[in-house]
Length: 489
Image 1 (cartoon, rainbow, N blue to C red):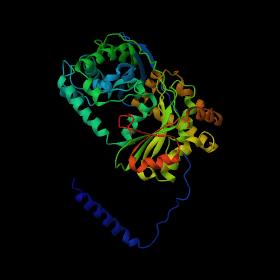
Image 2: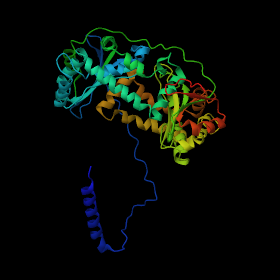
Image 3: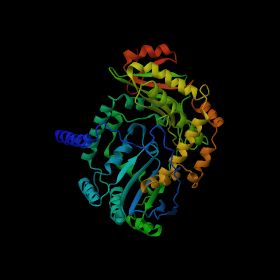
Image 4: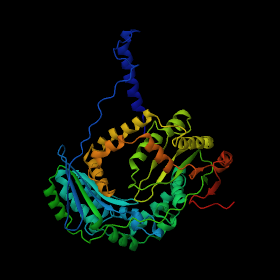
């Protein structure tokens, strides 16, 4: 884009400003504002958790409705409990995402282009996604456009045609994206890290491969759609300018063709392999300007009673800009644009992971800092009263933001049911966070951040970083290929 006109305009404005300021000469502009004093914080945001009603539709889907009258908007979602990990086979990894995309490609009543056009005329879109353990179809519409948008969603859900040419186009695009992703060290670290922790015998350890994408047939897509998109394990959430009884009747009419029963899936997972002693897994990316880190081990499920303590602990360790990891590795050392940590918290043992992208020349130095902070939070660098209070405040004062819009309210309410939480979870949240003390943090750090059994995955330029990493003596260095397979010396 030619930006010369913008430069000329900016220059003219600057010249005008200088001309207007010229009569003032060197006279200073007086101000009573003291810039050396940090303004006091404003009042803490208040938490307002909306009420909602629950009922069951004729097809077995559960319905949740919450009224929010300030704007004529409606946030609508259908969430299916269970996801790719429950409905994909190991040799068809990626099928769930393909099916979600294919719902946009046409129905028995509309082509893909017609679907797009009809939704544009209504001022909305229907987004479909299927993640590891749940899936959803969502839209936001004006109040008066709810019924016609529901009609289109029903058509997409019940009458998809899954055109063969669209499948081949999506497959080709996915294969290109997969190839391109192998040029990014961060993506490679994200692919290899779970495989190292869980192996491909566990759903948490699998990722899309060229072979799994090529194996997907149209028959697989049709079968997955029939098995997955059933109302029996679905939760419909509606938030906005609606009346519960009226909107239930509207949904019953619009989704009347959507039948088929279905049951809640089984979330039992294979046993996770016993952790090994701390090991460095090095994936070679020749010439890489940065090294991508993924350090961690399997953690607890979302249902763990240690959830709140772990949230407070991780806020201190790696989940804010001034967390220990980022303050050290980015701010003090300058090795990275940003690092952090987090717990995955799935239905099963989601991973604890710390990491980020590090300038290649500082790979070994950064690993020293990572391990210093991970070990430090277990006791050698005691958590201070200020850190504990700051973490509590961040979590408690951040919660009201989860109810700032109709879509945010929709997500917050839906999460309660997906995660199997009590309905007063949000009302009790602040008290539970404030009850976390240093002894709780010490206990969960000792249990879940086991620095003697860490998998350290580093993707970078092997020839320049391998020897310095070996010299650290944190553990053996195992070289892997980009799929996570050991490389024969």
